[in-house]
Image (cartoon, rainbow, N blue to C red; front, side, top):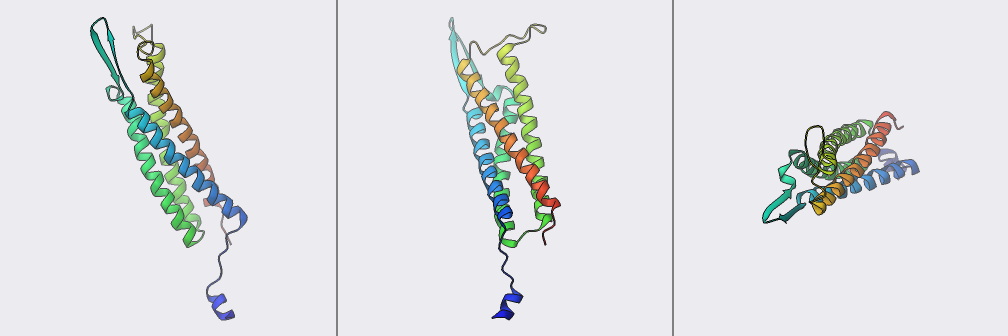
Length: 181
């Protein structure tokens, strides 16, 4: 019996390892949920108004920046789901800093995508809400309030997603540097 225990040591995770895994799983699930919610809100945001017999509509697909944010969130949600599955495999195989380095690279790339999408959508959203008097661009949110509110909520949830991915990037980077004995 003692010989079998020597051949197959029991790999019990420590409290800090369990905490790390719990934090990783929690923030990955939140990132997936935020990606789905943000992309759903953006894709379904549309509004049609009638001003003096002229029908005007606003849709996310009319803005390349809003489309970029929606599709970025779809990509990030899918890859975050894959990284959650990878994390489960890593936990089952045992701790290896190289695996956590791969998670770090993944989280960094996903966070970069979300930052780009948020920046682009925030710029267009700001112009829609406030306009630009120097270039003659009028604000549209006073006429398309429901559309603007949904787009604003979508961008806000994307920023929450970015924070989750930042936390995942920092914790994965920290874990990839530590060599476990």
